[in-house]
Image: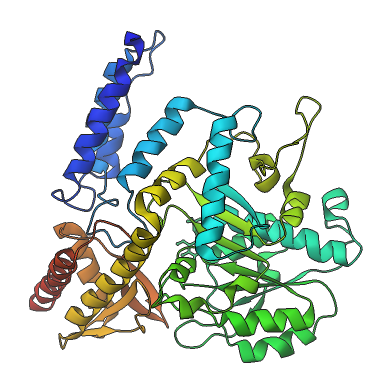
Length: 462
Ligand SMILES: Cc1ncc(COP(=O)(O)O)c(C=O)c1O
């Protein structure tokens, strides 16, 4: 064995010690940013340092600034845990260091990604002909899917956007619900469609697009249109009425894109798949591996029903790259990236290790734990649950007061049993709880709800 690689074993040991600590450590970070800079900011030497020293000191210096976001009681944002097989596969991906832009430089990694793509399509029940690209996250999945949408709706209007850009092109109107995730607007910004040009369709109190209004709004514009629907609101977990939205898109010749960063995976749960009724008829879907599929960062998934449209928007080549004569869709045909890591491989390992039933249990378990936390909190007079807990998201308001709610969030984060973040919902401060990890148990749910109630007591007593 080449001793220069002994450092890999050090990293495996240190990584192992960290994941073993997840259940027992304070969930939030302990060190301040200044303290972390003080620890990590070392002299950059001319001669370089021994790799084993670098790794040992990096792990030690970072330790107090690490959060247990992969652990059982982290409920911030929508941050999934990491399944053991997925973490291990991710380490292999780094050791292999394959450039997975295509099959030429990375045959095994590209084929493993293609198999993962098959499983994603099969689990979601999407057509085998759809294109799947593994990108950094749902943000870039939107960019990829909306680029395919832009390509298709402009091609239908006789315009080649890849060749001629948007200057002088027919106006493309994007429509999204009032509660669309901010990454939709950001994708429109990046694609030259204009965040401020999005036509906002009203939503109901839980954040669902009002589909009844959509037909009339689509009728207003005589030109290319793209509708962005949502499966799983980042705050409430609510689902847009996808079947109605897609039917309106079909009637008016609009492209329908679905943001299903986490919510799309309701499709694998027999008791929750009604939430995504009709979703398979959409034109594109953006989702994440690093949220509910519990693979490490970064892994987003861009799926386009007609792979030719994805390729039309993304594919590029050069004299030094041979044509793709395989039946494997290359990364550089399906994503905005050229060189890239094999980020679909940890997903391959995650899905294999879970199996179909394991994935359903993961989704259902998170939803049940979210409901359990909500019920335990709701039993307290000082607590109000503001959303209909249809999925894994809970919105909690304490003492009907912004001040108390924000202080409870602060205390919960400081105390360390669990971690949840804040948001605003209909103008009011809320704590938002997202249960997205494989490790959470009913006992974790109870323990976390009790820690939140203790924080409420401490706040109102003070
Ligand atoms: C509904 C929704 N869409 C998109 C995103 C962005 O996902 P990512 O952070 O993977 O880019 C999120 C993130 O929470 C989300 O909840």
